[in-house]
Image (cartoon, rainbow, N blue to C red):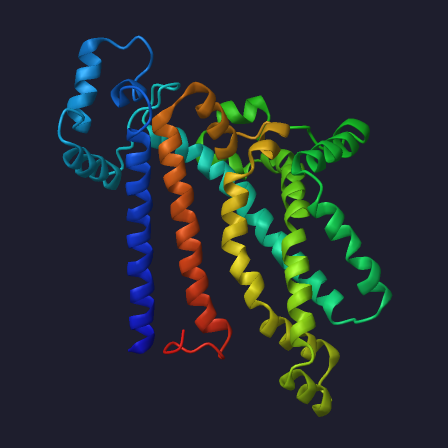
Length: 327
């Protein structure tokens, strides 16, 4: 029962945090200069259109009524109309968010798997040549701008070797004839997907490599590791146990890095002309598309909160040293 209580309490805290962030977004955008109704419409809107938006969103009501109306619209999936696309915000953001998640989630997870293994190898070989010089590549990659990695891959594998296309999500014919999810099942998509995916993997290997290496250095001489060596357990068995005990710091940074990658893919998406949320956010800022910007900020915040909630749950599953009562 205590475990269920712990999960329920974490869920309630996460939901309240999302509502607090939504409240902050509501008031911060209302404090912007100008009439908020005009920010929800395209330039040159008629007075009748402005009045219709005021009535739909309760902008002619007191601020607390506006807040309740806005929150009710958000809970029912009504995030307003995009100024630059003249479409519902949900219809504008959903494809871009899907494209970014298709790129960011597999890329970051692959980077964390490879980076964690590499970092554990560095940490379990003290004083070796691998530990001395193997840490150099992650440091170089970590200080290299992600867009430069993308440009370098394009220069080598697209311009010089001609193995992969330089950008876009698929060929024009495939994009035109395969709307929605069908595009991800085409050969052209995976052909265009390779270089952006590799760019994300290379860029985000830096975090788990260094975090796992430092964690393994701390864990490798703990009592359980010494006891396993005295028992004569195999090298790879001990390696796996050390990784399990050293994985918590890596899991801690995973949601934050994943959320950062989704919201921070602007330059990678621009380099590869990838129609994701980063590129949409950039164009929305230039177009002053306030409803789209506000909704994307909310989506990113929800992703971070949900990721931290899942980490709290995984903590109680992965590491038995963490108790529900003691948290």
